Image (cartoon, rainbow, N blue to C red; front, side):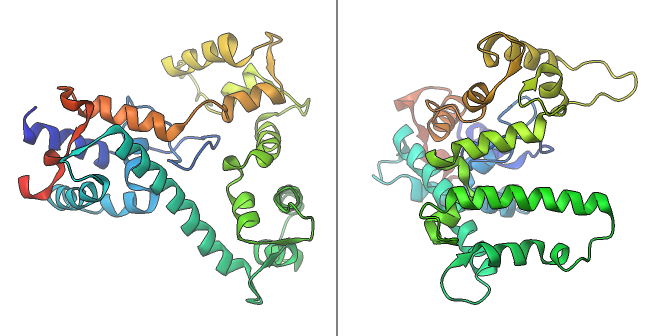
Length: 293
C-alpha cells in the first residue's frame, strides 16, 4: 500500500470528530459510540487516549503525522518495523489504564480536603455537594435533583468501600469513579443505568424507553435507519426472554458483556481498517514514522 495513502487513512482516524452520544460505559476507551459511519472519534480516543486525543485535535496534519510517528516508535516494542496486533492491543490497554490512573489522581487531590492521604465520604460529599448542603440551591426541583444524585453517589461509594469504614483508599476511589472495570461494582452500574432510562419506575426498560434514551424526534422528523436497527437489536438480542422489557440481567449483558474485550476488538478493528494489503497482518510502522512524512 502506498505510504502517502496509508498515512492519509490513519490521519483520518485521528482527526475526524463527531458529536457525543450517550454511551453506557464499558471500559474507558472512549466516550463515543463506535460507529465509523459517523466518524472515527472512538478510534481516535482509543488509540491516543482521551487527553492526548484532545491535543491532536489542535495540530495541523503535518504536526499530527510527526507526533504519530513518535507514538508508534513506542508501540513497536520489539523494534521490528511493524506494529503487530499484540503490540497494538497492549498499547490500547496501556492508554486505558493511564487514563484511569490520571483521572483518579486528579480527583484524589480534589477530594482529599484535609490532605491526610485518604478520602472519606464526608469529604467527597462536602466537595461535590457543599453548595447544596449550604442551602444555596434556589428551587425545589434543584434540591430534589441534588438529593437524588447525592443518594446515588453515597450508594456507589458504599459499594466501592469494601471494608465499610467510610474511607476510600486509592483502589476504592478508583472503583467509585470507574465502576465499570470492577466486578463487584457491576450491580451498581446496572442499577444506575436502569434508573437513568426507566421513565415509569417499573424497574425495567421497555422498548420505548430504550429508544427514547437515544433518540427524540423533532416534529415531522422521520425515523433514522439506525433507530430501526436499534429496535431490531432490542427485540432480537437484548430482550433475551422476549417479555418486551430489559430486566437487570439483560441490562448487564447489554452494557457490561463479560466476554467482550473492547481493547482486543479495537486492536483488531484498527488492524483491519489500516492494513489493507494484509502484509504480516500488522500496521506498517514505516507508514507512521515521521521520517517518511
